[in-house]
Amino acid sequence: MTDLAVIKAAARKAAFAARKEAFARGQGQAAEILADFLAAHRGRALAGYMPMRTEIDPLPAMAAHDGPVGVPVILGAGQPLRFREWSPGAAMVPGDFGALIPAEGAWVEPEVLIVPMVAFDAQGYRLGYGGGFYDRTLEGLRAKRPTLAVGFAFAAQEVEEVPIEPTDQRLDALVTEEGLRLFGGV
Image (cartoon, rainbow, N blue to C red; front, top):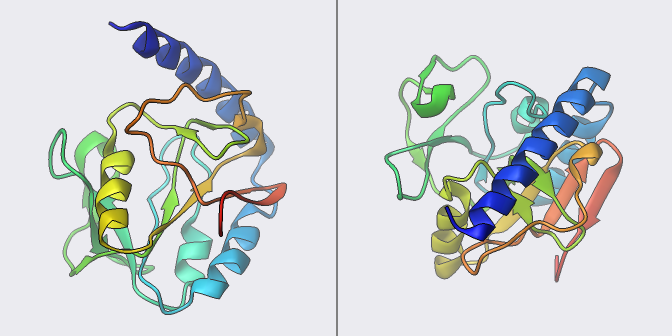
């Protein structure tokens, strides 16, 4: 294991504990803040996610979105994510890693992604679960056209600095229960 892998593993462990505590306190107005931000992107294809364990819940904002919404489907290790169309009440089945995915539906190529995470920093970098799925996906989508990555997390998940690699993709915006932050030229 490389030094960076050890550093990231330790950062994930601490961040999971902080997220668990934040989850127990509740989400506050986070989903409403996210929905308000996404309203400026109505009509654009959106990718959200099905919350697992102590992840902050984007489902109310996804349901309120005026436009197509997809959720991630893992096709295999080392591959980018694909997104299957989702709507409230859609039949769901377990996918890889236990995340629910729509049982059927069209593929959606998102222009805006709500990105889950374990931790984030003030520079707009996120620490994910370690599979690189969102980094690969964002890199591929951004190579085709402007693609907005909106991190969604509890404020308690902020760390001083996320250990990054050249392949890590920066967020454009971040929403927590405390409000909205923009990074770069959003």
